[in-house]
Structures are given as C-alpha cells and as structure tokens.
Image (cartoon, rainbow, N blue to C red; front, top):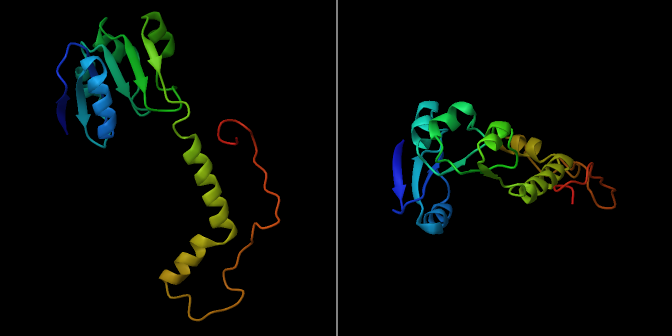
Amino acid sequence: AEWSRVGGAAMSVFVTRRIPAEGLRVLSQASGCRVQLWDSEEPVPRAELLAGVAGKRGLLCLLTDRIDREVLDAAGPSLKVISTLSVGFDHLALDEIKKRGIRVGYTPDVLTDATAELSVALLLATCRRLPEAVEQVKNGGWTTWKPLWMCGYGLSESTVGIIGLGRIGK
C-alpha cells in the first residue's frame, strides 16, 4: 500500500486504513486537516503504524489496531486525539491514553441497525431453510415442485423474543 495525503494545513491526522471518500473529505475539511492515509484494505503493519503516527495530532484507527504505550510513545506529545472507527475500545490502552491527556472518540451506534437487521435476516433464513434450499438448487436437488419441500417454519402468528434490550434489541 502507499501513503496518500489529502488536504494541506497544519493539523495532521494519521488514518490507519482506507475509509470511505466522504470520511476523508470531511476530515480534510475539518480545520483544514492534513490527512496521511494507509491506503489499503489490509491492516497497517506495526512498523508503518509507528512511523505514521509520529508527530501527528490525531489518529483515526480501527479495532484491529492495537494502540498501546509503544504507539503513544512513537506519536510523541503532539498526539491530542484518537478516534476509533469501532463500537468497542478494548484495543486502546485507555489508562495510558488518559495519563497523557489524549481525548478519545468512538462510534457506539455505528453497527446497531446493521446487527439488528442481520439478526432478523438470519432468523428468517433459518426458519425457511434458505441456506439448505440454495445448496439444493445449486447441486440439482430441485427436480420438480413438491408441496412440502424446503418449507421450513413460518413466523406468522409466532411469538419471537429478543434476549437483551440494549441498543440492538431496541
């Protein structure tokens, strides 16, 4: 992967993965940030992360990037904010980050709707035996119409419960 630069002002931000163009545009326009991007779908190698964060004021990372004391030391005292494109933040050394007075942002609701929708899709696919039926069709198992073939169970007039009423269950 190659490094890409977007924008050209004083505040510099290191982005550890290719993100949507709209995100880069917003970031580069925010106070005229200069964005240094690890332009790849693959995780940034550790050595590149350490080099890329050096001297930056901001870091936009993903949950696959372990942001620990070594990364914070490589960034130096100029690092003021870390934002993670994730619901969780277990990959961030929060105690060390707090000690250094670095602000942290995350995206707590970014996957809520998608996870709820996927849960409903999986429920329907399972009840109606969809994965099994697709395999049968692919492999020539559907030879003629059969009234009970691959019917599965309907959800009509069923009671479906959701365990837990956190963000996803609501």
